[in-house]
Image (cartoon, rainbow over all chains, first blue to last red; front, side):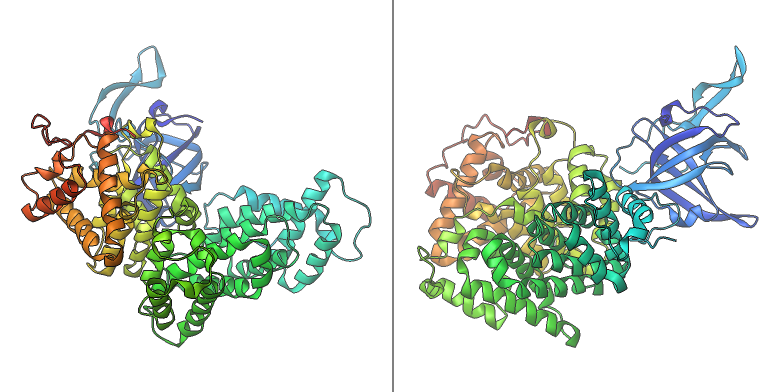
Amino acid sequence: MIVLKDIVPAAQNNIDTKFIVLEKGKITLEGQNKMCLTLVADETAAVHFQLWGDECDYFDSGDIIYITNGIFSYQRGNLVLRAGKRGKLEKIGEFTMSYVETPNMSEIHWIPDPTNPKKYIQEYVVSPHSRVFSPIL
Amino acid sequence: MVPKLTLAAPHEAENQIELSLKQSFESLEPSLKPPFSLTIPKPDEYTQLNHAILHAILTQPQFAKTHIKHLHAIVTDGYATFVNLLLKIIHHLYPKLLGSVKNQLLWVTNEMVRVSGIGYDALLISLMRHIVGGDFSDDNLWLCTKLVTLLLGKWDSLLEEASHVLCSGLYVFLRVLADHCRLNGEKFESLKHLEVNFCVKIVREEFHLCLKIGRDFIRLLQDLVHVPEFKSIWKDLMLNPTRFNTLGFSSVSQIYCTRTSSRYALLRITPEMETQLRFLLTHVKFGHQKRHLMWFARKFLSELDKETVIVDIVRFICCAHHPPNEIIQSDVIPRWAVIGWLLTTFRRKNYIEANVKLALFYDWLFFDERMDNIMNIEPAILLMVHSIPQYVEMTNTLLEFLLLLLDNYDMEHKDIIVKGVSSAFRLLESKGVIQSLHVLTSCPTLSPSLKEGLSKLLLSCGIGKLGSSKESLPVPIQPGQQMV
């Protein structure tokens, strides 16, 4: 299992992690399929997470989700974590998880690693918090 | 396919307890039908057989009698394994269980009481915790009916072997009667009747059990004085205490002076609520609590009727959740702040709000340093003091309520209450929970009449001089400075 602050964009379905859903955006239609952007977080970082299809109906804010074989990559210009076709989401609890809202891994500008072009490294922080979901204080 | 115990939504992880029951059932299913094996199982086989039989009883009502006979035949440990499994299911899964499984659960609980299975008292108490205050759903009323019927049905054996279960039952049903007596309609009449019968029977026949509960028994009873049966009990308590024929009992003040065990406060909070409240008060940082509070409110306080459970939550926080010093000195949200939030969540200003405040101050009224716990009275003083800078209306309301209680709660025993409240103030100051009572008595934004009332009280008990040094400015202490 990896923690959110250590995830790096890649075209691979290999992220196993656990987080709590902080907020759910509006459910939109993407062709035939439902889609919903959410803000999720663990004790180390937050990230934008995309629900797809019936996942949009079964998860709510406050839910703790375990994801296996998830992918963190660009979708139409937005950097999101999602289960994708090969990943799996499971609700394993609710409420009992601490979180931080900064850094937000989706709000970081990443560039290819000059020493290893197959990997991404952080270039700069675009915004300390999500620009889609503003923090509640 | 093996039948399920719970209603699991898609994407929901399977519960480990359910999974292990299911696996035992799957592997032993053929041996759950007669003729039963005569060989004595090894210890691990015995545990597995208990799992399998329990799963079968819960999911196959039509064969439940066969399965229970099987259990009676194989049991070698006084049902301890079986009852423990039931306890786990009740604690972790009850709200999610299917209706038919809940029915079977109550049936098999009855059976465990009948055979005096080891731990059946804990089983009954753990089921009582799932009766939720302020919840008028059919499911909740069904559980009330089932449990009060069971307690009445097993009265004699419970009285003899496990009278603490009757005490717990009395506490639970007095509390929910306050909800149920506000309901009208045929549907509730028979349940109300059973609950009244049960409570009156204990109070009239086994009054010594009420004494065991202590002062919260009076707090609950008071909410029912409009019900004729309880009105006459109340009158006897006040005017005719010998009517209860209990050796050594001569005045209600004896009950006032008995602190109620935190077990009772815990009894009115479901395990799920307990988990969330304890998490909140142990892990969530002050200033970052909004989302967690919202989720808690959405789950437990969403309907208007449910607000009466706030009384139970406040009692739980004051009496049953006492954080250690490392939490008190950390940046975790303190108890007073959660109570302050609860006090502002009311959408109806009414009797519930008064009951919540009474719950918050109840141990103040009869406080005795020798037997009471300072942690029970700490949240109220800190809420009053910390509200001064930004929410002085909260301080005003709370102090006004406390002074009203002093004069009106029980005029016959005003001396006890004056002594209790003033010694509460004295201890809170001398232990440094607040630096000085000056913070209240010379607070410029507090109502002059309240300050006067408070000063009078403190002077009458000879503690007015304390903390009167002009150097100590009314600065509220920071969370990190709190000590106990």
